[in-house]
Amino acid sequence: MERIINAERIEQIINVFGSFDENIKRIEQTFHVKITNRGTELKIAGDEEAADKGARAMEGLLTLAAKGETIDEQKVRYLIDLVNSGNDDKIGQMAKDVVCITAKGKPIKAKTLGQQRYMKAIQKNTVTIGVGPAGTGKTYLAVAAAVAAFRAKEVNRIILTRPAVEAGERLGFLPGDLQNKVDPYLRPLYDALYDMLGAETYLKYLERGNIEVAPLAYMRGRTLDDSFIILDEAQNTTREQMKMFLTRLGFGSKIVITGDVTQIDLPGDKISGLKDAVRILENIPDIAICRLTASDVVRHALVQQIIAAYESGEKKLPSQRTVYRKKGDK
Image (tube, rainbow, N blue to C red):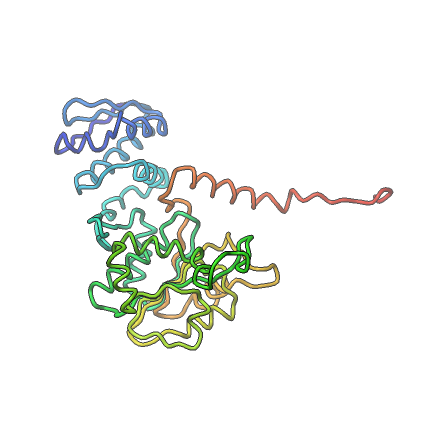
């Protein structure tokens, strides 16, 4: 069977094909089709189901290209997932809203439908909890939303915080004073702010007190008004720390809490404050729980496969436990 699609402009075809036709090759290999073009006309050949899926993928890519989006490996992978799950009709919802413009003029947008729901939840609710695996943009998008709110004068301060929980190392073994010791834990937050604001502007706002990056322990006893507050790596908070943090909320403020419940570094006898908060706060108005999945991963393609492999391995663990018996036991 053969399907024919027409693009509006040859530039869209060039964008969709990618360097050395890498995007087209990926679609051909995934759906077992052959794609050829003549001018602005695309032909997708294969069996009926394959040709239909290949055509839907190409139509989705052309839709993104028409909106001025650069077609890269991540977009192709995500569109293939949407086609396989029957959700490719929602591709038009992507590439709509720009969350923030970085210091270098790059527009920050939600790259998946899950990320889009996450950003809408942040805009609509006072407290948003984003739970998902590594690479889903939880922290980066939250910082982008914070910078956008600050630039729009919706808040007077941006406060970024993390629990200083050791993931195999101890704070005492790190060199320098207290700030030097906690800086490695806060580095991802610094990096995101540098990207959005530029180092010079970031330092200016830091000196003025408009931006604060600090360990979670520094939040105790404070009331945070007119602030956009982000708690990152929240899976490593205890129940008591999470309650303390949530009750810092003041008037005119927003809170975004991010974390990955599969990467808890707490001692075995401690309950994760993030898991506890998701359970307790699920149905409270003005609090949104957003669950991102492996399909929302926007890092290297291998990250998605690594997450899937670990999830599969964890499901098999209970049945693979070995029971050791003493000699003579039946």
